Amino acid sequence: MSEKAALVFSNDAYYAAFLSNDYNAMDLIWSELETVTCIHPGWHHLDGREAVMESWKSIFSNEANPKMEIRNAVAHIYGSLGVVICYEMFSDITLVATNIFAKEADGWKMIHHQAGGSQPPPIIDDDYEEVKTLQ
Figure 1: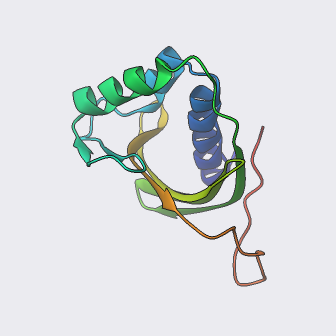
Figure 2 (figure 1 turned 60 degrees about the vertical axis):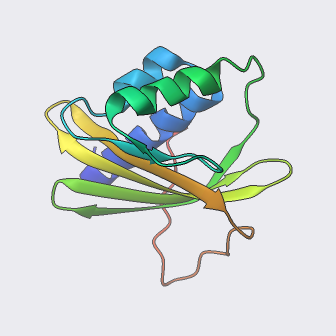
């Protein structure tokens, strides 16, 4: 598997954990070696693994699994950092997300997630490289 495919796979794993309310899977996705940060829509910024993981406990305490589709994932690798930008399509809102990963011994681990309101995603043209998700 190429590095870019492995990065997209990690991004897909993040959304699989999110959509299934799987705290244990989410815990495995986030780096334990790097300082992690997160900005959920409408929240203040979260700094540090403990704060980020507590936020997921709170989010997952809601019994209703979110219904969302991920579109237009674009991945870039900058040395030991990987960035995936994608659209989170809910029934009533579209968010654009930036997910940043660090390359660690056991794969790409998330170090930052931020999502905020957006217009629907653009149609990807030849200037962008579309990365097909593995799920």
